[in-house]
Length: 604
Figure (spheres, rainbow, N blue to C red):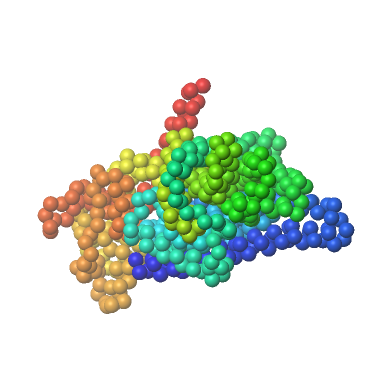
């Protein structure tokens, strides 16, 4: 735990620095794609075409991102969070080492060129990618590596929102479920706190959203409004998940029908977003940032929280809010669904704010309640909509309280968030992150556990007759030769079919270093103090994985049955490795997919 927490501190620093670099890269690209061209046109007297960057920049950005995601690193395409989730659930936290570097470029280009995507998903993948890189270099165990990768996500999210507990809860709820143990939670929280401190040093301590008015909850008579808002956000978030992937399917069909190369798909999405940005600029002029659906800025949400948008008639304000909600949803699907590199976290918050504000305005218009707390309902809508979309209720409650620095909001937050979460689950089983993986045919950890629970160790093990084993008289030089020729780092020691022990490369190196003369396997075994770790053939592969993770071993001797006497040696019948487990899992997964395909064919 000391080692893991030290590494978590380092990951937290990188998460904070990475958030700063990422934000700087977005601003730099935005400057190059928008500010410089617009100033150039104005200076040479061509202000009449100052709108052109809004139409063309997302297209150019899409071309660059399409090349990066199709030719350089496919893992950097899309949200970021589902890829980390897959890595944690199925690959023990292992990620391609180039992911964090390419992700910064691809996502900064998507967002900086005008795409409607969030920076939170990418920074989560960037933090996770560095943590995976560090963990692999440090040869961490699978359990430690997974924890460090989740810590990287916590650091990135925490630094982005200036919310250390919220970042840690996001990582736990989304990536590991709510069942993380205290020992796992500590390094994740450490990474989140260090990430926030680093981010505050580099970016300042301002909250993610600015200008919050006093939002203290004091009126219990508003509870009915909170309940109705929770229902609306639950329904809306479920529909948002369905809408997102439905439009993504339509775009895939268009690409296939017209043979559009994968590399150009983000450019097509960028063109559609560019039309939205250009039309917005035409109608709003110099105030375009207040009404933009770009992913770079939170300004449209800030003006709602500040109340500066509510100075016109109710009908005009409602029209603007509904239009922003629709355009943001469409622009996000065009950006991310077409293959752009960016998250859906911030767009989901945007939609929740608009939905909450729309509800508040309707209540004020229809029921005519004096002093309707529009900013409060907009904030609650943000939390509830994310809870329904990402299925992370604790994150939504705590992170919102942290961002507003107002913990008295927890009562209304718990009401709207819990209702939205339940309603959304009833209407759509999967969240927006896991559904992406399921659509790709990726079986997550829960399904993987179900499969491995149904396979016995005897089915997966390498049988004794196919193994290389040694006896107690084997010299250590022979063990070294076996390691060099076969590549394995551990061998069972067998006498008359019974398992005497296991000798590893580490055991040999320690013995030769301490006394290089006249050493054989027996001399090493009698000095070993750790108990022999075995598994019987009737156990399941899931049981084997638990033992391997708990004892931090990559192989297990398989015995006929457990021995009853302290000095009795078990009968060895096989050898189980991580490779054997993966092989059986892949085979079982293929059988499931084949069965589904056969059932689908027979249904026609």
